[in-house]
Each structure stands twice: as structure tokens, then as C-alpha cells.
Length: 102
Length: 317
Image (tube, rainbow over all chains, first blue to last red; front, side):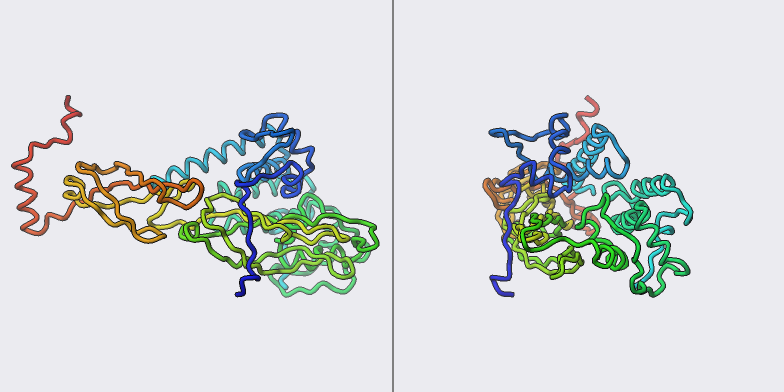
């Protein structure tokens, strides 16, 4: 493999994504994200100089909420609740792994 | 190419109503949801269910599928007849082109080319210009890769526009350098490696979500690394300097006198590299030698006689 065949990427949590970038990745309308932000369904987001900043963690959350809404016709608040529970479950599983119990 | 029975995948009869199909899809989507399912191949099954739903939930796709599917059995060798799709107009609903690209060859052959090329994007001439779609994929790494960085080969199935503007699905392989210091769950963005743009628009990005394979010794926690450190009773009681094997090489660690099982030692800056680097968290586990050997038994008996030690004293207080 030659060096110029190798692609080097940037880690998103060291940068961040805008509403438009997130919307493209999650194949949703920017308005969908703005509505969910306004309703407080994305915790731990920050808005700097009128620009919302998303991280890799928000990316997973947005995809999960979109899936809940698309597959189960879930209300946004219910989709956010499911995302909260899945995040909680992940955190618990990570604690089990750290304790060597998984 | 094998024929796929989408009705069987969703477990619905061929005359199922739209509501029946939706209900069956939701039931299976719950059963195979990758976050909660205990089925070993949940992700692959969910993909099949999504594919079946993408076809059966769309009246045009379903009608075309029903027309060519008559008399075919699942798994049977299948080639669509020429112009099988004449008279149908397909559109993509619900699933994005990159999601559909992950479906089977059977799906791509029938619907990936948007009905044999009738649904074309205009290219050139400035008629229509759009940025290509972003792609999302998971990359599975060893924890050692986070310490040293790594290069991984990644295969992706992605929609592509051919010279005539038709959408086709192809597989491409990329060599990607994973930077040193990545953590579980982080997303790496490769600019311009998603779908090509349309009409001269810029290409989309490729986003790789980092996951670590479970390791028998190292348990990552952000950039910290937890390791269980087995020690002898005398190392724990008297203190010792021990050598701990880490991905970046061995590291000498001082065990303080009187260390107990379950106690955690933090070695700053020896976890996954970064700014700041993570810590190494050593969980002490005192391991007793067996008393089967007569000499070992004698030593235990001497300790029992001579050490005034009762670990259950507090329970009685």
C-alpha cells in the first residue's frame, strides 16, 4: 500500500457539525433538527454565535430519533425518550464492561 | 442472484394490506433492533426487514415485484427479464440512497438502477447541481490501534452516477488512517469520500464511527483504560513494583503497601494518548496461592495462628 493511497480523517469531536451538515448525514430536513433543538430534545448541545454545534454523540441520537419516528411513527418526545433510555442502557453496559462483568 | 421472498421476510400473506405490512414491519423492527435485540444476527436481519419493507410499503415497487415474483421460490436463481419494469415509475421513499445501497444485490438489480435508467439525474450543462450524499459506516478497531494509530481497509457499497446519469451501486475499498488517540464512539470524517456530487457539485463526506473489539485485558472508558491487575498476597501486603503490559510497551507500577482487592490505582497519562491523555486505572485483585502443597499449607496455618486478623469484625460490631 502506498502512502498516497491512505486517507486521513478528522475526528468530529475535536471539530463539530452544523445543523446543515447533521441534516445531510441523517437524511433529514434542517427544519427537523431545528424543531428538535427548540423542543429541547438534544441535550448537551451548544449554540455559539447563532450556530448550533453537534458532536458524534448527537449524530447517534439524531439517527435513533429519526428511526423511531420513521419506523414507529413516534412523536418526537417519545423518540427522544427512547433515545434517552438507549443512551442510559449504553452507559450501564459500559459500566458493566469497565467492572469486567460483561 | 437469488430470488428474495419479501412477503416471507415480513411474514405476511401476498394479499396483505398496507396496514398489515406496516404492523409486521414494526413488530420485526422491535425484535431485531440492534440496540436491544438478543438475536445473534440482529443487524443483518434488520437490514433484510428494511429491504423487504422498502419494497412492499411502496405501491409501485410492490406492484413491480409482484409482477416478476410470480412462480419464483426464495433462494431460487433469478434474473429479471428485459424491460421487466416497463410501465412502472419508481421513487425512493423513506430510505436514503446510501441506506438502499446496503440492501441485497437482488434489490439493487431491480430497484437500484431506478427502473432501468428512466429516472435520471441531469448532468452537465448546469441544469442541476448538488452536493453528494454523506455516508456513514462503522469501523471496528483493536484498543491497541488507539495507542498507536492504524490503517484499516474499509469496503463500502455506495450509489454512483454513471456516465449517462443512471444511479448504480458499486463497492469500493478505501485505506483509511485511524488517528492515534481515538475513543469508542467517536466519528471520523473523511472529506469528499461520500457520494460524488451531481452536475459538478462537491462530493459528500464519509463518516466512520469507531468501535473497539472487546479485549480480554483492557477495558476502555473514554481515554482511560481499566486493567485488572492480579497480585500475590505478599505483593499486596508489603508493596511492590510490578511490570504491567500495555499496548505501548510495559510500564512499571508501584503497588502501595497494604493494597486490598478491589482498590484502584490511577497512573496518570498512561491511557489512550491525546490532549489530555487518558489514565491507566489498575484494579487490584489479590490472588491466593493454593494450599494443596504441604509447605503452603504450613504457611497458611502459621498465619492463622499468629496473625490476629478477622475480616468480619465490623459485621459483628
